[in-house]
Structures are given as structure tokens and as C-alpha cells.
Length: 254
Image 1 (cartoon, helix red, strand yellow):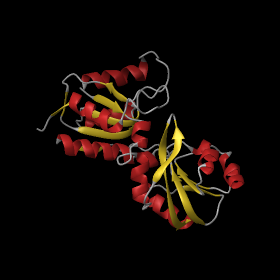
Image 2 (tube, rainbow, N blue to C red):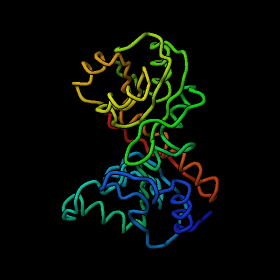
Image 3 (cartoon, rainbow, N blue to C red):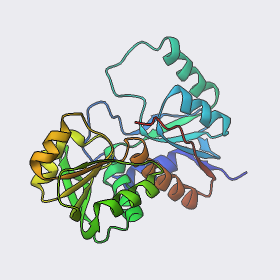
Image 4 (cartoon, helix red, strand yellow):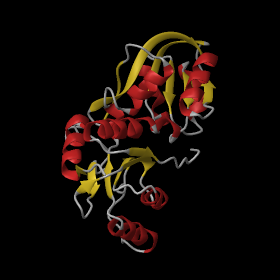
């Protein structure tokens, strides 16, 4: 069975993702969040969210490294009791390490959620866009695509029918992409020169705001738009370290 060093994989991830140089939310805790007892990896699992359910899926898949976009730590330290204790116990008993990458994975120019989604949509020559926590995390591209065609492309790429706010022109010419939950930042997106903004989700009040801004907005689903990065990262690690990988689909529908 092929085997690689957990430390070597973590070092490689930290290097290519620039984990310690990319700003993020205080609770993100990017990098290795849980080590394993063997210090080695024979199979990588990738999923969007670290949760009790996905940890169980990773154990069933016989993985000993779980790559996630939304990690275990988003709020202040809390008691490890109840379901939290069950999760911790499962990780330790089953030799399962967890590596999380939030904004570093969003921002990566090749493996990132935004780069991968742009490629899936056929958007060319994408440029850095949308500053967050000290760096641009999204991408924008010039194109001439009808709203209907863009909706079809987004649906094919994610497997989910997107929600459209048709606030702008039918022809999309300057398209910005920020996967996940950037819907509350429509003013920022519009101020950076896009007429169409693709993200995962947003609040109800953004409908009226999009109309006021003359901005087309596509909500493709927070989960659905963020499966791309963990898949690309796990595939890259599998190729470099010669260990198998598997994507664990646990959609939220949100």
C-alpha cells in the first residue's frame, strides 16, 4: 500500500497555498487542525465541511487525511462534550488527520475554488478581483455571454440550478466570481467594475440592492460553488505523493 509522510504533505500544502501569508477570519485556523497518530497517509479524503457526518464518511472510506475547506474551528473554544466529544474521539481512534484551507484555497490561482469555477465556466484571462482580509480572493473576466447561457454553464459546473437576480443587462460582459458567501458584498463587487457577480449565497435584501446597482447576481449555492478547491487540492496531493484520494459529497443544499 502506498504511503506518504503527513508532515511532508502538510509542508507542501502550506507552501503552495501560502497558508501563513494569506489573511482570513480569526476562527479559520488554516493548516493542520488535527494530526494523526501514525504520522503517515495512505489515503486522502476531500470534502467541503469538517463535521461529524463527514468525519464518519472519511472513516468509512478508510482515509487517514481529510482535506476540508470549512474546518473544525470557527468560534471561540468550547467544551468538547456531546457530539463534539464524539467527533474528537472518532478522529483519534481512527487515526484521521484534518487539514483545512479557507481563504488560501479560495485565492489559489490554479487550485482555488474561484480559479476552478472560472475554468469550468469557460471564462478566460481571469484577473484578481475582490479584496478580502488583505488580498484579492476572487477573479473577474471579460466575456460576452447571455444570462441564460451563463446560468446553464453554472448549473452544469455545480450540478445545481442557480438562483438569478436579473438586475443588469441580459448580456454579461464583465463577470466576477467569488465562491461561497459573498452575497452581502454586492456593492464591493459592483465598485470593482463587474456587471455580473457569481457567488454562492446571499441575504434576501440583496435582490433590491442588485436591481439598484444594475448588477446581475447568480447564487450558485455556498456548498456547490466550493467543492472545486478541495477536489483540485486532493488530486494535486495524490499525484505528487502517490496516494489515492476520494471526494466525499455531503451537500447542504445551501
